[in-house]
Image (tube, rainbow, N blue to C red; front, side, top):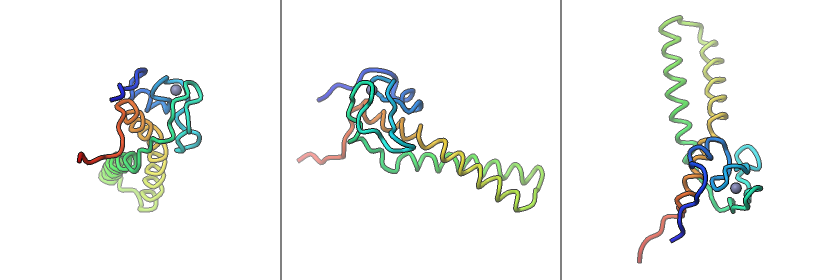
Length: 123
Ligand SMILES: [Zn+2]
């Protein structure tokens, strides 16, 4: 069994979108495209895919925040419907775009730190 990767906390490295081994090299080559290797320490990042996990967490968190805010605003001020549409669509889109990279970074960093792989059945 391979020992877990040493280095910075997986949560901190992931939230900063940095390599989980060195904490210095960028995790992404684009907005959400994982780099093939870390530019600083050479860790292979290409085989680590977080799948839909980050999107699920982000959708749940953004949904709670936006629905809660919309309910509070409606109860307090009852603005016209078009203000709700503009405000909450903008907030939901902005929050989702802002939260996806760090959430994906955390899941990838945790996976690398604990040497997690695809599920396998014991035979
Ligand atoms: Zn690195």
